[in-house]
Image (cartoon, rainbow, N blue to C red; front, side, top):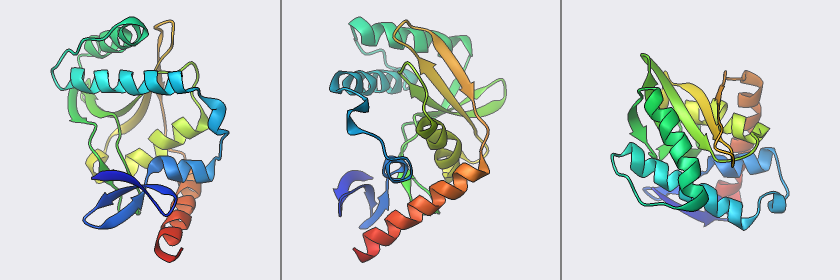
Length: 186
């Protein structure tokens, strides 16, 4: 799938059909100040996610500084859980008309978890809705429980095991429908 802007909306394109991204839906549902995160923090998160995807895929890419410190903490946590990664960074389309790319699906102690890595100091409502509501609606993740693994600048790993909030799902689905309408009629 290709990620691109279409009619002003961040979308995934598959076979000529555009699906609003989970992030686009969340931005409509919970608009935030674009300055809430600086470019350095965004670059750090992107780098850390790429390193973790490689690591889960059996590679060990070179990294340095803060990225190494933070991903080393995430790798240590992952290894201690004796996880088995089943799905890594797979783009998915929901039957509800939105698309996204969850970080990974793993099995820990015979329980399937949909994990989203957050290299951040705090977890927001949008982060929770992204994982508990949107990502669990992909067929590829059916039966997976939602989890955020937060890694702070200090290297602390904080696990957030989430439960699906059906009120969040109703709001998210409404916002997704608005974006799909705009894509078809604007």
